[in-house]
Amino acid sequence: MPSDEIQTDRSMRALKIALYAQIAMVVAAIVAMTLAPPREGPMMVIPLGPAAVGQTMGWALPKGAAFLGQGPLPGSILVYARRDLLAASAWQHSSLLIKAPEIFCGKIAGTQGKKQTSWN
Image (cartoon, rainbow, N blue to C red; front, side, top):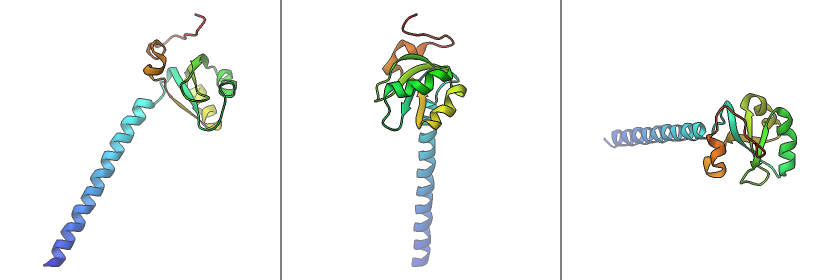
């Protein structure tokens, strides 16, 4: 009956692979939900290539983003914006939009529904 043992071993291996794939999908979904930018609010714009802060601001601000500060990553900026107005341009300029992490911007990430700038 070695054939039955081989079949059982293959079935167990397939089940393990399916389980690991499901776990990976759940982890990816949690990460995506955690980093997803809000519909409107503080966001971090992260260029995926070598871009200066001025270059990032050059395309983000005309799309309605209010500059809140420089981000922690090279070329990144913190903005208050509407996701729908900024998302297409971010894609065109090879940049990511993520929720502004509270650890990097403190009270900025906690503001909801009102623009805050450094001069307010």
